[in-house]
Length: 74
Image (cartoon, rainbow, N blue to C red; front, side, top):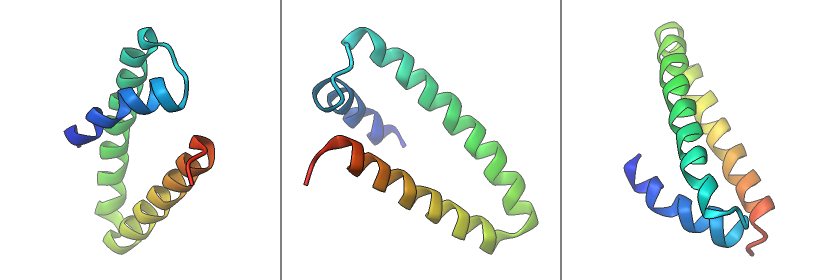
């Protein structure tokens, strides 16, 4: 998790063109989203572990495809 923070600043500033002053806000939003994801994921895992795994992998795949599409790399 914490290794991701190392990549966010260069990705946001060099690839996305966001100003350095907005990086802390984006990191805060990421942290809040991660907290919500842990709470919601835990509740879904209590109901069905397999469905949670499939849903998590699907969401990860979609988010990585979206990142690839908007980053303009490749």
